[in-house]
Image 1 (cartoon, rainbow, N blue to C red):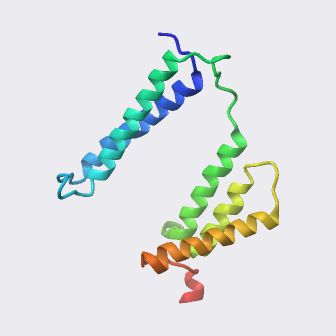
Image 2: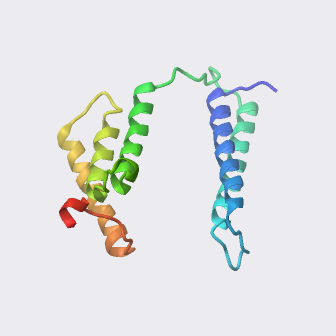
Image 3: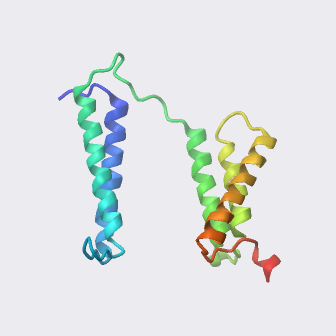
Length: 162
């Protein structure tokens, strides 16, 4: 078959691969049953649904024609770099890096770093808007995860809280 939409085909292929990876990875956990779900049940079901969705998108790309074939363009390296760097910084700041002696910096610092670094992905950076967004995200995350869900996350750096 001929691919009539490259963007849809490759995005469907990516969804299928990620879904299959989750489904395979869930096999390391106890699955349980639908009535008594184990820790591997949800990742397995999510992986299967994602793989099926990806397959449907990939099949659609071979059936439905588009005007220009939806060619895949050049890689956007700048956004790719900054989004990955933002996620890495978030993980390191939230949990620390014991192998090099870096203590957890807490949720507040991690969210501000995530927002600031990710906003560099776009060529237009506005301090005021980024700081407002970071503040709203921090307050929302604090309310959701600390106050409502009562998760035990470090909110502030350990050198402040002791």
